[in-house]
Length: 325
Image (cartoon, rainbow, N blue to C red):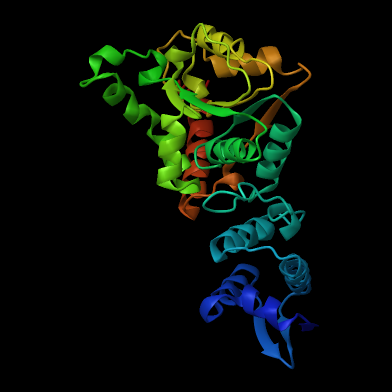
């Protein structure tokens, strides 16, 4: 049994509504937690007690620094620390807040997300590669809006390949805007999570924010801008080279994609996979990898990704022909 002394504020924030965080920690670490004499006691196996004490002391420091941490974010961090003892809460909640002038504050929720943000700050071209739900696009949009609000760039350009990278927009009903909007919706969704609708509309009307399919980038020079290419695994080699050579002075570009979800026709190389091979050692270009531990959607999404990875490895070992890149 070990006693841990925390401030009343830290205890209140840590335990959460109806002590749900304390109950979650008890289940996660197989310990018993009780409040007693202005502190709390932890009873269980020594290694579990020590791990939980470190979490609580780290939380107390973060709370005293003024971090606002949601219960959902805490539980996600608790779960990953329980799986990997080398991690600490400081890896998940560094003093790194984005979009202070927007609708909500955003901070990285995993070590890989933190490294991604740091890479975007330090480099003009960054590739974020990993499965869906790991925050690649959302954090890139948050960084773009932060740069815009802080006047580091004068505009934001958001783009992605439409219709399976072939961009055959003529097969879709409606005018050009109606044709492309379904394929750009994830970018709109990220914007609306971060900024008020009226502000987004004003930015779009003023062309301060431009959302367009990749085909519309050809022949342009994109200067003084924060540019995001989403779903980059569905670019061809030619499209990726075209995009990268559009980048002008005083611009940053973030390219995101999942190389396990390539929709290109068989025989066509993914521009994202090729860029990773060709540009891996170019100074000023950073590559950031994400995995299932970075998933910030429903906790089952992480388990689903793991299950599919195990299945793919099994099929590959049995001589299967599943295509991953």
